[in-house]
Amino acid sequence: MMDTTYLYYQIADSIRRDIVDGRLKPGDKLPSVRELSKQWGCTQGTVQRAYSELSQQGLLESRAGKGTHVSGVLTPVEMQTDNVLRMVNLVNQAEEFLLKSISKGYTLEEIQNSMNLAMDHWKSLESQLTKNTLKMIKFIGSHDPIINSISQQFFKYFPGYGLSLFFSGSQGGLQALSANQSDIAGCHLWDMETDTYNLQAVKQIFKNKKMVLITLATRRLGLILPPGNPFKINSIADIIKKRVRFANRQAGSGTRVWLDAMLAKNGLSPDEVIGYENEYATHSEIGRVIAEGSAGVGVGLETVALAYGLDFVLLTKEKYDLVFYEQNAQKEPFNLLIQWLQSQAGKNFVNQFPGYENNETGMIRYS
Image 1 (tube, rainbow, N blue to C red):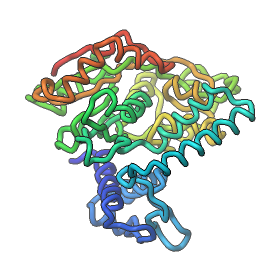
Image 2: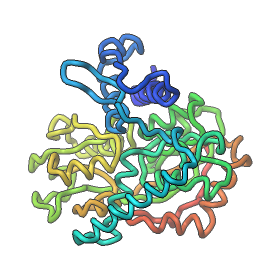
Image 3: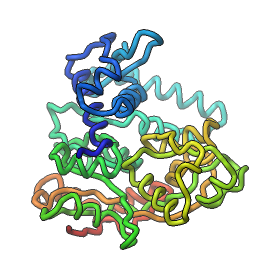
């Protein structure tokens, strides 16, 4: 049976491609959730999740009583040109935003963090260059701010190549790679029995296939909380005990797998967690809803908590790996990616992100 996280990705990706290729135009109405769920043979919730993801990316919009339509303004990277005047205008607008922010008391670091989060929210699907000039390498997997940053500069480090992203969760990424829908997967799946990350999941999905797992970074994962930790939450059990509304990651994400395992290990039920059913596709979204006050706690990355000025309580350190077929390891750009992550330049790149450790960056395991 197909993983629902991966099916949700397929639906969203199919609609996105129709929009980018012009088969769906601004203002076009999409099938109802019920109609599309019948077409795909899935639950209405899976289709609703795909529509919600595309709405967050600005590609779709819902109109009360009129259904879901393609947004009137589309800005896929394929529409970019070499028009110098457009770029000058864009730089001028960026400088205007920068000056206004500085005048309001924001530091350069705060402004940079806000822009990183905004870019992360929109999830760069392609490089800044067009597909005509780059050979695109497709990444599907768990959300990570470093991956997002690498994608924006991929052509710089690996000339001739671009990296397109879709954040589907760890399990969805491995499923997509197994189905040859992507070139690289990103995951951080903890196995309770062995107390290890990713290797057991890769072995289970890629039976009798040789795979490479190369560590991008060790990430600090924990509780993201409002400034000052007003509810004094320091553990998973405290979330239930103090009845604070929770912001959850989606099923299939590595964070969700870890959380569910921790609940089971401590004899706790998801039904006891207020807001457990409220799912968000990225760590950045968890930080956003807590900063806005829609939730009082979530499990996410320290780097997101720092960017939003939120409190953070460390719960664990997790290994985030990039996974691809061993037969590609000697081919470009996979061999270049390995060399870069094992070099000081790659380790320095990881080190610039707070909440990450690079002591195992570039370490390779095989399944």
